Image (cartoon, rainbow over all chains, first blue to last red):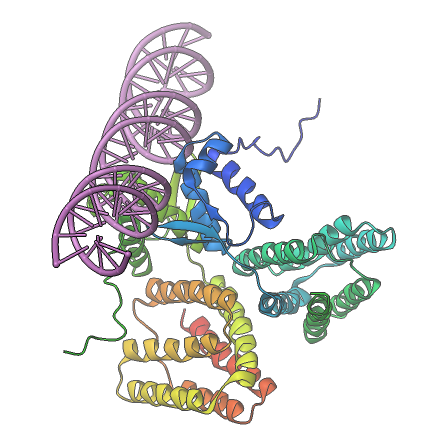
Length: 221
Length: 221
DNA sequence: ATGCGATATATTGCATACTATAGTTTGTTG
DNA sequence: CAACAAACTATAGTATGCAATATATCGCAT
């Protein structure tokens, strides 16, 4: 039988990763509320691992800005405020616009085709009222462009911001915001800019694609 | 006697912080070379703490991109390549330009005066051939603007990028690059944009102030 | 001599035990 | 009764020990 080529080592998740993933999910979906105090011993017990991996997970969450640790005292889930919308989206817009600018110069035809496919999928999800799927496809489209710019710093910062944005939506809206046809069109504008190798246009289109939903979200909240 | 107002609790550094600071310094200044393998036990001994805080420091360094850990195997100092110059500076430019744009709308007169003071100091350092001092004052100027934009995400990302840039200079040049009068002038252009509350001009001037040294560095290496 | 497998060694990952410190309660004294 | 301090409790920080895993070494068979 043909052995799968890109066989990912089953990647047994370490206790640290398990703890990190679970706690992060709980924070994003609001199970752990902003301001809530986290006890190492408590989580250690409920996740069935010792305090060590819990502490390691806390550290990573702190770097990501999802918890704040007060040394020797406690660690709490960080708060979320309305003003964060602007801070998050404007930063993400700056990074993605820059990535689009770079990608415009490097992109190859089949990669453009892939973006078109992704955006078609996105359009279907928007049209058939599947907000989760739409949100995920949207993120995939953006991440694909970040990947194209092959800039690991941008990729890492972008991830971090996206997590906070998702949390913001959950905390304030309890659901993903509906993506609109406007977003689909903006994506196509980005793709056209890529086809024309027009870095400046790609930059602008990408900025639009993030600033518009930011304004919508600011109104909704 | 009058007690100092802004008395910073001596902030006894934890073992983890000590370890992190020291290892980071060693990586930036090249004591620990790119690609070098790091042993928990070795560093634990040389820093006089147990393996636990060393492991915690490793984790933070990994997030910062200064080391790479291969789980269950080893952790090594990450490499630095010429292509990183563009990746680092273009990302930093995007973030700082965005920060300048925001700051232009929020800045108050006395804060503009403070920037002028900082830049005057910077000019003196450049003129008197003190490259270290110049580099530090330059960073202070930029950080002041990031602070003004009051965006913790940008601040954190910026810090991280600056660390990598400093390391790049050390690894390839073994010294800080000489700042030039051009940089001083660009700073004044940013300040003028602030005085005019001209966000777009601030954005452009800031971008220039980062892209130019990037090109210089690319030539030098 | 070389390739393979078994055994030994080194090193990380996790758990537990110990220590230091912040917060709380309680007791004592004015 | 109020105010302070001492001891008690809870929790985080650090060290150490044990288990799992990867790498290296050695011996054996071909």
